[in-house]
Structures are given as structure tokens and as C-alpha cells.
Image (cartoon, rainbow, N blue to C red):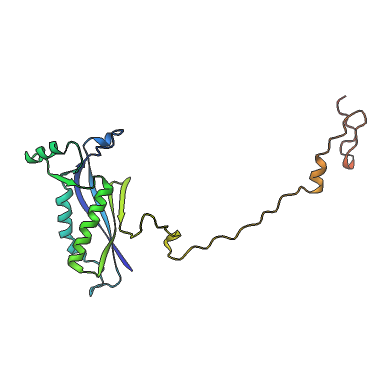
Length: 208
């Protein structure tokens, strides 16, 4: 499969995690969001492209309608009616997300919008493989439609074949050599001290 990538500036977006009552993320805050898209295809077009990057300007406009200078709110936010009033007064541009907000949900939204865009423009020839949305250089979230059920066991290294189990290893107990075993015998310490192996301690008196 061929893969190409494209980075698109989404714009300045504000939101809040109203459930994060332990954190300052519960308050309205914002980021300059950008998204990286991975496009894949089995066959290139007549120009040897996976996706015509120039054609993505329309997708960029659609994405910025959602994220640029907007306030994204969760549909279950307790303050939703207040935000709707601010929107009606022309103070904010409100965007309501049914599943909730955050860069994880932003990545999912970008994936869905890009998939719909590519389907309309290229049919089944190419697809969106994954999308990564960045709050800044340290924080990002990635969404991909991997087609894996939650209960399925994911194979190692992404391989479809069952991974072989390593053969059991027989462990041989360590046995001290004769010299090490002899060390455990108590030393003969007293008036008549053994000279030891090779008379190493000849002329040395212990305990006197």
C-alpha cells in the first residue's frame, strides 16, 4: 500500500473538559490546533499520486469551519444553554460535539470529515488511514479506524499469524565446586593454628 501525509492547520479552538473537576482543564481554554493526515491506496492515479494535495484546500476550509475561532462544547455540558446564549448574542461561534470534546474527539472528527471528503472525490481508490491532532508539540492524540473489536486479541507486531510460543528452558540448579564447599567448614583457630594451604600463614599467630 502507498501512503502519503498532509498537515493541515485547523485554527484557534477553545473548549473545556467539564468533567475534569480535579484539573484546570474544566475551565475554558484553547489551542492552535493542527492535524496530520495519513492517506493510503493500493493504486496511484494517472499522475502517480495517492491524493492530490491541491484538492485538499476544500477539506481544509471544511475543517476550519468547525475548529477555527470556535468554541467546541460537549452536548452534555451542564452550561450548554449559557453557551447557546453567548452564540445567539454573537459572542462565540458554538460547535456542539455529541460525543464530547478534546483532541481525541477532534482527531476522530477530522478522520470522519476527511473520509467523507475522499469518498466523494476518489471513490474507493484511496482512504484515510489515521489522523493525529496536536494541541502543541508535546501533546497530541491519534485516531485510526483499525477495524479491531475490543474483545479481539491484537497479534504482536501487527502480524496476522499466531505468534509461536517460546520453548521452555530447562534450568539446572547451581552446585558449588569442591573448593567452594570446603570453605564452609569452620576454621581451626586456637593455639595450634594450621599453616593452611602452602603455608600461606606461616609465622602468623591469631588471637595472641
